[in-house]
Length: 134
Ligand code: ATP
Image (cartoon, rainbow, N blue to C red; front, side, top):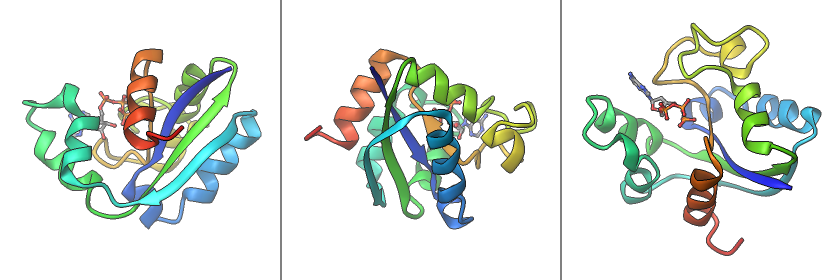
């Protein structure tokens, strides 16, 4: 089975949406493999978002993602990467379809509650970054 790194970002944790997100992905059939609540260092955040280095929103993104505890999860299941991204909905919550996590629960692109790996290569890289012992 495939694995994906999922984050309930600091906005989701602060808003008390951890249960909602975990409940949706468990209901879908994804299995929890690892879970940890932690506050990221700037170093880990910059590594995680390395592809966005140099973009105008990069500094704000790092500040936001390190601004409070997040829940890091590894989930597993058939096509887990695509399955979770479908649950999450489009990056811009206003464009995300109703019924998705972002479509139902968020309004701003900078505070879109969750992250999910976008390819097998990013999943491998992100899981190694967050859970090196897995
Ligand atoms: P994630 O990587 O968090 O799952 P994504 O893959 O849907 O999101 P990316 O394009 O990789 O979207 O952007 C990563 C994150 O950077 C977004 O989830 C969002 O929080 C932030 N972001 C992206 N574009 C913008 C923007 N224009 N302004 C502010 N934040 C942005």
